[in-house]
Length: 355
Image (cartoon, rainbow, N blue to C red; front, side):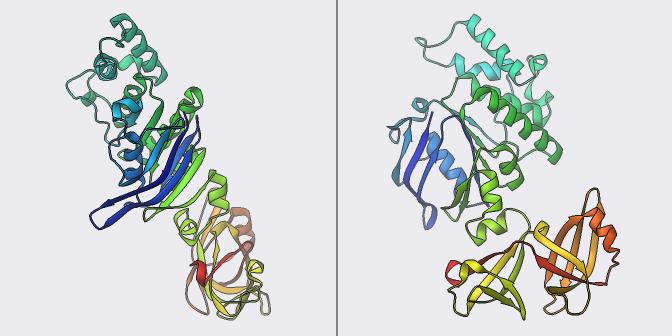
């Protein structure tokens, strides 16, 4: 089922939660709503579910205006961060709950309910826990049961609000891979909220970056990471080095160091900031006259295939982070305090009017 939201606005008192948000969620795809706390992502999810009502705008489900529809009529499965399982019910009873409270005219028979629940328990690989209570399960198991319960009513759309936020890092990683495999099997249109960029980039087909109630960028994980549309997206999606300076006719001058900014060929001496990720930095031993930014090594962390270098500029003392191969780091044979030359292999410059 395809989902669209058109010109959604929502305020809570003086706080603008959503500011004219329009989005399309493709049928059968898994979309991540990503952004910092307070950016509006959970409010948008609740509006799609029918748990909140917008001040203006429309929610379209399969081309039909569902804005006035009750949450029950939208056929939405909702998974919360804190599981929301019924503590006094077994795993089996928790999953069966949504089917047993359906109106008698459309309620499955008890035999059909039994078959359905065992199918779902097998799907989430927890059939052996059917007679346990939530308190007897681990956090990861409880979240999988919450997902099975949401799927039991055969929702047209699955909405997940920070589904792994209450779990430790190792379990989060395992569960998000499991969710991706499950989605590939079911192909139910799904939207999940997260503030964890690694989670969004690993799991989603489409990522929606949100900031202060607005959409900053929409695209595939590769697109939003490799081609950020704004300084906010650059800064939010992983580490980034900033090079402050003046831009003039396609060149960024940062403390006397000239860096190419060809996309701003027509700029005439205006403020600009260059953005380059740590893995986009080229590192060489220092020798007089070599083009680049002179730095000295503050700290290195060289475990596994990559070496992370913390570098301080000699001219401004600003910090630069570089990630190079461990082989390259070994070949450089540099000690803490020694001087190096760094250059961005790829630089994206935003000038004053875009900052």
